[in-house]
Image 1 (cartoon, rainbow, N blue to C red):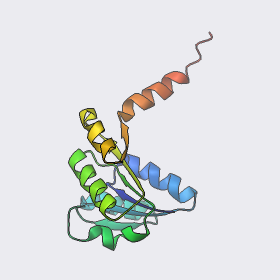
Image 2: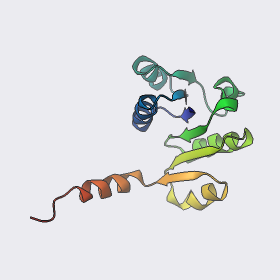
Image 3: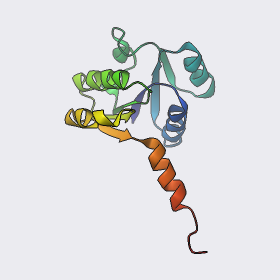
Image 4: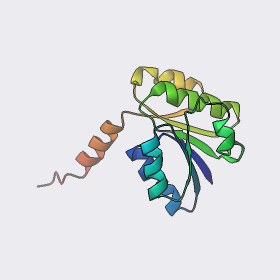
Length: 134
């Protein structure tokens, strides 16, 4: 499988590790030069230092071979741009983190799978690990 990840934060690093452990190929698009360098130094992935809205960056990243685009930035408008472009290129699996929960219906209407409120998911998982039988 070939994944294109937009954004290079902490979530992306975990996502890359998981994908690489499973034998998948990964490309990352990141506009921040330091974050792009950090990913390049830590992982064997294709890194594209660019803004998702710039020209043909998805084509350079091999979007025609991509099985999924996953947007992990803290900016819903950037994530939306990545998803709309991915849809135009016919990428089957479009997934994004969502910062503003109010926008979830719009993303889902476009056929995009959304993870909103990741902190709540983490908190629920942590709570589920408590031994309440004491």
